[in-house]
Amino acid sequence: MILAQLAKEFAEKRHEGQMYGEHPYTKHLQDVYDLACKFNLSENVKIAAWLHDTLEDTKTFTFEIGDNFGTAIEDIVYAVSGYGDNRKQRNADALRKILKNKEAARLKICDRIANIVECQKTDKKRLKMYLKEHNDFSEICYSLGYEDRFLIQEYFNLINHQNLK
Image (cartoon, rainbow, N blue to C red; front, side, top):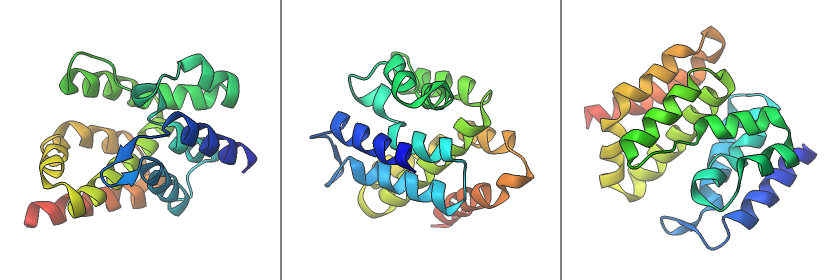
């Protein structure tokens, strides 16, 4: 729990001044952390929930995550961080890494759920983008096992509900 609090403080400092729609960026991080808690995911995933966007969205280096939170957390955060010239390339890069790291897959599903829920309220254009990416993204869900069925079910229920609208 102490490490999760340190990760929260680290992320708050790194994302300072950034917004997530109308909210401070940390609202999104809190939402992802809350989902990791709701689904009783590992402490590593909970810690990484606070840090998952630091590599992509701040001037944080991968080694800083490892130095401050350990290599297991570094591996998860790195895996969910996509690099490339455009969104398609960044998603493909992240997907390739996520499929090799079940903890990263769990975190990414929490992140996607949080994004979709927020977009339902505030950003229909972004919501359409997430729905369009569903086929590629669902591969992450299928990489997980029976123990993650409730997390996966929540994601698919959210997607199916959107597709019925």
